[in-house]
Amino acid sequence: MKIIFTFQPKEEFVSDLTNSFPGVEFLFYKKINQAESELPDAEVIVTMGEDLTSDHIERSKKCKWIMVTSAGLEKMPFEAIKRRGILVTNARGIHKIPMAEFTIGLMLQHAKQLQSVWEQEKDAVWSRRLPTTELHEASLLILGAGAIGGEIARLANAFQMNVSGVNSTGSPGENFDSMFTLETFRGQLPKADYIVSVLPSTSQTKGILDIDHFEQMKDSAVFINIGRGDLVEESVLLEVMEKKLIQHMYLDVFDQEPLAEHHPFWKTEGITVTPHLSSITKKYMPRALEIFKKNLSTYSNKRDNFINVIDAERGY
Amino acid sequence: MKIIFTFQPKEEFVSDLTNSFPGVEFLFYKKINQAESELPDAEVIVTMGEDLTSDHIERSKKCKWIMVTSAGLEKMPFEAIKRRGILVTNARGIHKIPMAEFTIGLMLQHAKQLQSVWEQEKDAVWSRRLPTTELHEASLLILGAGAIGGEIARLANAFQMNVSGVNSTGSPGENFDSMFTLETFRGQLPKADYIVSVLPSTSQTKGILDIDHFEQMKDSAVFINIGRGDLVEESVLLEVMEKKLIQHMYLDVFDQEPLAEHHPFWKTEGITVTPHLSSITKKYMPRALEIFKKNLSTYSNKRDNFINVIDAERGY
Image (tube, rainbow over all chains, first blue to last red; front, top):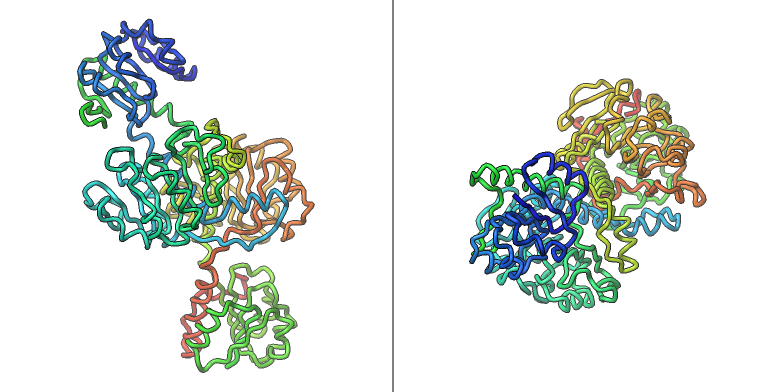
């Protein structure tokens, strides 16, 4: 059995895989175009999820399973995959820990004004006159109360924050004090100190936040987007900060990534840009490959209890 | 009854106090030397805790109660207080929330390399190649497992860290996986990813950390001191970073505060200086005065169920 990787994992992962599955021929390529001659023979394709086209699927005549080592599936050629009946699994679930830690980290560094502290420190300035606050008893509104949003809520609860969420049905969630839908959450905006979005990009979420939403937020509100950049038009975000409708926004996701060097976000006061960092951690690849190895055992043993199976019809 | 404040609270607190206790004459001074003529008449003195001398105590002939709106009591003239049998209460307990949030904030910003992220951001650099880690399953050793250390442990538990502590008896503590004493904690040093000290300054803790302790820590260890600066000699800390024995230290407390502008700590690689910020929060004074008000009701009603009574013999 031939398995093609369209990215090059570190040597430790390569040897772990080849040792764990001696009967398998693993082929590692840095990019999918280097793998093209082998595609017709590959039974399994392992990809980070942004390189496969319907043309690749057509040519992968023997392919039965695609493992995506990320959670983002927007660019997957599901029509072609569906036609061929190829199994798709992904690394869903491994993002919640790093993303929740990143989110709490941003909220705490905001509350403790650490950006200002580091500025002072560079100039050897000892000044304790900083408007530091607490997460304790502050209000958090989480747009997207799934696995990641739920993990953020769990940690926020430990900090004794008031946590409300938004999901597709409005049905209660563990660690959420209240739950709303995209149709009903507006009334929460004037109460929230922190508004965090982990929403994926779907037809229901694209451009859903408008200037009206930000007008309803507190002057002191902090907006954090670690979901998808198309949740809100870039021009809206710039208008929000121009009018100083809220205190600060931390943006980790953008329409176009990497964010262009001359994009106004970099220099706009009140906007902090992070380079889609929220899920990055040294533990990412070990966790993703752990899922892959479990599924590869299942596949090798011709069982069917795969983890994280994607419905090609729905796309998630 | 006359109550002297040796600091000037904000107007909102002044009016709250005068409205809540109409029978009391409150006198507010910016410094104790401005209050000296009134000291002989004062029944109660409210101080931040660093200004009272035994001479002040001698002159405060009517003083029955001193309220200290902080937790640090190192500079209190307890001998004189004891002789006069004056009640002392403090603001113990209000520090744990901001100090625990500050500590977790420092650990998260370290794990997520936010200082580097902000540096990149200033230059509009989109780079995801940062050695970011997680608190999840990392090891934390807390020197000083009292109220503040316990609150840090509680939050660290939410992050699923492995938490060990040091207290005076080694007896188990809630949210601690294991507990040691100052005599037995050495064996934990090679395991800890984060070592946090919240120890007060006492004859048992002064200069207790030596170069040997740091030599036993991981190269990647992070040391955070939010307790007292005299826990470890400054020359030891500089030697630690010169030899790169650990990865980073965050120092919030120092022998001499403010830290002098030309102190080597400011510019030493691997040392981050913060200006004794850990307990600072907008909620500090409201919480301290809440304790004072409760105790003032008790005092006015000639009851004796005071909160946070200090034993003048022990000094805490």
